[in-house]
Structure formats: C-alpha cells, structure tokens
View (tube, rainbow, N blue to C red):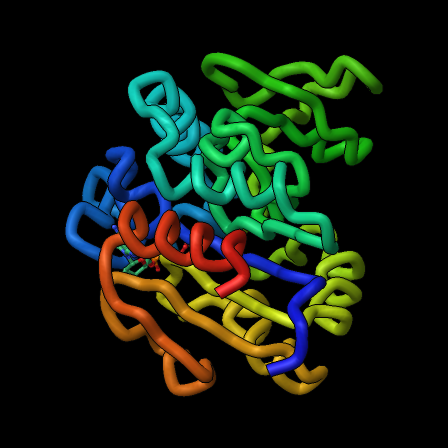
Length: 234
Ligand code: APR
C-alpha cells in the first residue's frame, strides 16, 4: 500500500457505548417506547415539539454522567500526533470527542450542546433544558430547537467531508451500523477515490463488505490498538 498521509475517520454510536451512552439500534435503543426514527424527524418536531425537546433534554442531561473512553482518547492522541491531514467526522451528537481533546472534528449530525434557530439558522452553544419556544439570541424569534440533523434533513459540512474523502489515503469507520446515509456511503466514496478502507466495529455492519479490512471487537480495545499501530508506522 502507498504511504498514508490523509486520513478520514468516521465514528458512530458504538464509539460512545462503553462510556455508557446507548446506541440507536442495539439493546436499549428505545426511548420511552419510541423508536429514534419516530422522534428524530421534522414531522415529529412539528406535531409534538414538547416530546422531541424532552427527548433531547434527557440526552443532553445524560452527558453530565459520562466520560470519554480510551477509544475517544486514542483518536485525540492521533489528532495531536498526526502530521498529515486528518478529519474525524462523527455522527454522534455527544461531546466526548472534544472532551477527550480532538480538534479536527466535524459533527455531521449536529450536537446536543448546541441550539439551532429555526427562524434565522444561527447555531449557538446551549446548556441545560431547551423548552419549545425558547428565544434566539441572534434574531429574537421564539424558535430555538435542538441542533440535531433529523431524518430527511441534510447533514452538516458535506462539502468539506466529500473533499476530505476524495483526498483520503485511508478511511476508517468506527462503531457505526452503516444503516444511515449519507455516512453509510462514505466508504464507497473513499474507495472510489483510491483510499484504503478499514472498519472497527463490535459486529459486522450493513456495509462490512465494502471494507478491505474489518476488525471485530469493542472500540476501547480496537481503536487504541489501531492508533498505536498507525503512529508506530506498522
Ligand atoms: N465498540 C464498537 N462498536 C460497537 C460497540 C462497541 N463497544 N457497541 C456497539 N457497537 C456497534 C454496533 O454493533 C453497531 O453496529 O456500533 C454500531 C452502532 O450502530 P447504531 O446504533 O445504528 O449507531 P450509528 O451507526 O451511529 O447510527 C447512525 O442513526 O439515528 C441515527 O442520527 C443517528 O447518528 C445516528 C445514526
């Protein structure tokens, strides 16, 4: 394989599972009997804003009870040490990557500790509960909503992500089921542009067959092992 310089890492809920945050499609993937697909939609927000806001309030509150795990820490070490291009693209809306120290990070599905004004589009840091009708500090409209990309909405930063995938020598997917597009298609895009592809996941994912290599196991073991391997140039 040619020398690796540019790396894109995609992470999903499996990365934060060992910190104690439930994944979406595994056991514990329901919230008050609702499937995420039924709560995380623009239609649900329009029909029952109190329910949708409560869902994200509970998840925001849960962030105070969890810590980054050795997998987040290993990725932050890679970020600090890697001389080439690196982009960590997370589907996670928790803040465990940044609390571990990662800097070259994009939250493609938004972030719990952020609010979005549905009126003017401003995104702003937010702590604590976010009741429907909260006022925007930029335009004053009573239109703040969780800054979460719902099913059917366009993920953030797709231009930057696609540019990084086109330039990548290595694409690594960690702890994601490969069920949700466009993230599930990143492996094909990266491979198309010539990147090597590696998957680190607890079990085979929907997209495992697209990867040149799949390693199965918990992220807290696989990610530190892979990062050490990469930094040692093996
Ligand atoms: N280590 C590694 N992988 C794990 C671990 C672990 N400890 N625990 C679970 N996994 C794997 C599961 O096997 C599964 O394949 O992580 C994956 C989690 O899949 P999902 O729950 O579907 O989460 P994700 O892929 O991030 O979901 C994508 O769906 O609802 C939306 O917007 C939400 O960003 C989310 C998107």
